[in-house]
Length: 122
Image 1 (cartoon, rainbow, N blue to C red):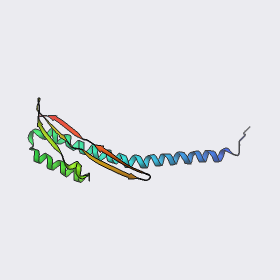
Image 2 (image 1 turned 45 degrees about the vertical axis):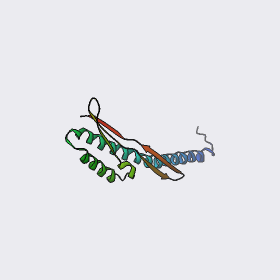
Image 3 (image 1 turned 90 degrees about the vertical axis):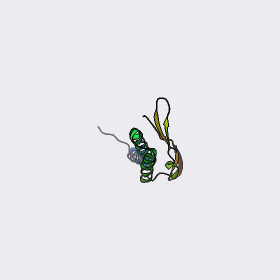
Image 4 (image 1 turned 60 degrees about the vertical axis):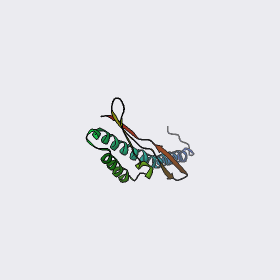
């Protein structure tokens, strides 16, 4: 025998709607914030690539390539102040920068500080 209650049908639809709303909000915020981290990862990848190529490249060439990548990614101006250091024991190259990037979302403004750093032996 099938028995049912008339009040539960609306409740299950409301629960589904709330779950869907939470999912869409998480997706909206996650994609926007994830974009910042994705751009930082792309810059870090380029920094690591240039650090691996450093034994055959002078610093001005490395800096120019990194500036081109930062402009391509549309990073803030502060991200374009790369510090390239060669030396140490054992000899290595260190490429680093620091910048602040922010995201403006519905009901939220958040700033993130990124400090990408790449080091490779020479």
